[in-house]
Length: 371
Image (cartoon, rainbow, N blue to C red; front, side):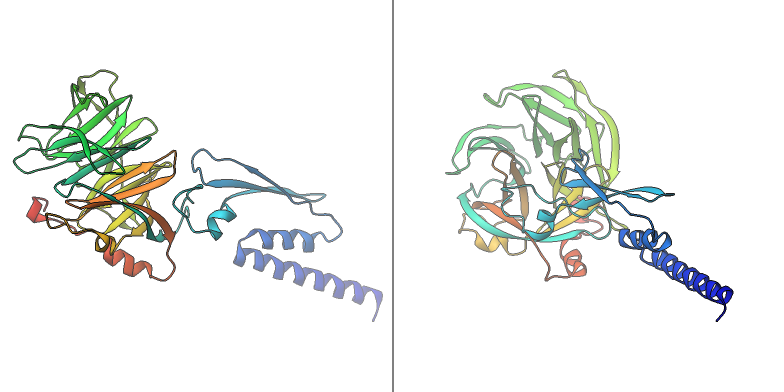
């Protein structure tokens, strides 16, 4: 073989190798392929890989990975969010360490539960709003058709109602939250809400939301978040005064994939996520508060089987309270004789389709006046 033929053969082999590598890059589309591409394209050069981690305020459970590739003639930076290895390998526990934020794309993650503790709860309480305040206090909003709806302060451990106020029969109490050292309670089929002093339950004034209905309410990034039976979460600017109308900032559509989700009921904020009961479903959906996307489903089927016998027939699951200092989740329901502290556990045995069948609400609830 002549020297020229040898050079051509070598050049042909190099070209073929580059083309195969390029096809691999296009097909795989991941960092390993990029690395192989740079090594094989310029085999005489050194490839440097540098990784740094930094916190991300937007997604508190995701860190950034910065990978830098450099050769003599080329330089590329590649940044991709990754889920911390702890979130990939451990089950959530009872939130005694950072709750893993679900994947940022694709299908929602699936979760089940373990009951850690069971507390007494007034079975006459038709729970519509629930809130934990340290060290051992629950604030609860209960509804009643024709009245009286109530606002209550409850001892977590004993379930004893320490104090309560009854509302006029025109109000059917719904969601409850805490903001700017005040309790805020909203009402069904009404745009009016009431501010309370959390120590005395004295009314500090009223406010009006830009909505015609009130279901759940919580606080995210100093904005009120309200559900109203629609597929939307409404972000509302709090008022610095004790009276007056509140301004709608924007709304986010709740979506699981391409499906819009109605009837988000009681709301709670858990480390930046919005957790929502789904009316008439034994499920909690974890919602990305920035996008409205459902990033996780917590299947709570069978939780009511752990209830003590009460004086009334237990109703549906409704009521989420989060202890931020202790990383604890509490759940109860309408006319439930107990409140549960639960551990949320990643579920790998049930298919997403099966969980969606359990958790997705009806498209309408005409029996409640929602066609």
